[in-house]
Length: 50
Image (cartoon, rainbow, N blue to C red; front, side):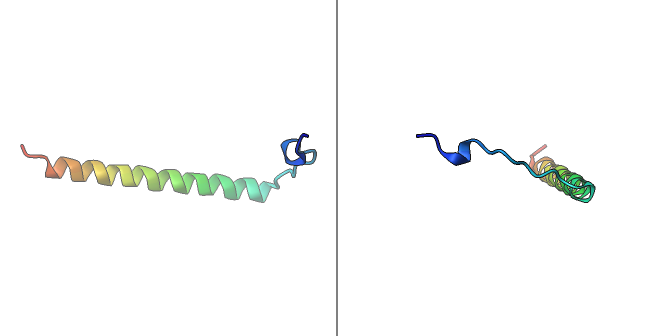
């Protein structure tokens, strides 16, 4: 017996404000992730014996 949740029929169209908020949130997450990667890379370089 197929389940109802496997076949949705109606999808909500996001508004312009929701799309803009989603885009800004994605950019903020990307900037935070890149900053964290730079921090980790800098700490690895600082700790490596030369």
